[in-house]
Length: 392
Ligand code: SF4
Image 1: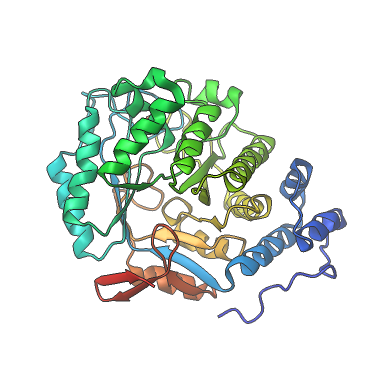
Image 2: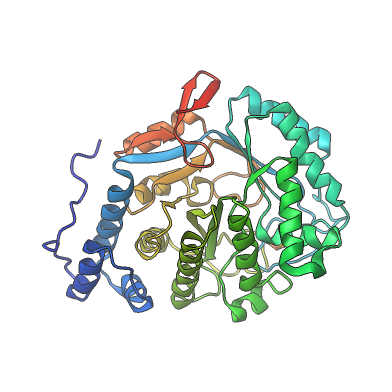
């Protein structure tokens, strides 16, 4: 157990004196500027950056670090798009292409219920031929089998795709709202944060042309918030973007969160999840991807810049569990869950079976000096008796 997380005071003295004004802002709960963010990226005093981020996470969450018991389901890797960073998509008749049947999904739901999971996290490619009814039936099937499981599903990119295939693509915001309402009626509980990548026109056009742009991604989340759904936000970094682009991305999320908090919306962003680019066999496989130090620094800076987003997640599947432990000491407060199957990226595994037990997650959290707290998707504490559970 950590005995003394940094108690931040104005007396905290970074060895890089250029950081002093940033320390003062953090002490006085002032939001950091884009220039501050860049300085945090450029300083060699990484210890102070991480310590500052740790002080903020300690103020928000004490010594608690969150995990959940969940299942990730990637229903299909068939995708109409060909994003350059993506190692996951296949074209319909290409080797390795798949689309799970509703029976497969119902088996997953049964397995999830038997394992005591509280969440199913569902995302996939933009399948050109699956009908809208496939998606609503997927949700209602899961709810029939496991009514208590929270379904977090479909990135903003998929939501726009669903609006198109259900002929609501030209209805703008109203079409998006109507799609989300249909999905909620079928069992949707919240949205994950994927598909945001980095909000920048140049990078969009170069690396994921064809995907929705940042404004549309934000529109979907704004509508979801207005409809009362909580959502999450990601940033895929370490490919062709600059550090300035990352800071701009974080500030855009912060502004959007301010809008949701101050409007009549009952939904907000719950967590920000920086995702390192993993080259794999993508079209950008000649790039090295970010280093461990860059990953650590990006988590810490995310905590410091996003002062209105409650949780920063170190997604252990993409960061590795060992790095996620370090990240808990540098601003992150959540490492995601038991996962089981994850098809989108593979860092330490050659297969898509990437599972951690709750015991291993708890051990990793304790070894890092924190108290493991099982949460549900909405970050409510879970009380558990074996496989049965309830919200505390
Ligand atoms: S990132 Fe998503 S939208 Fe882009 S190719 Fe991969 S699966 Fe398709």
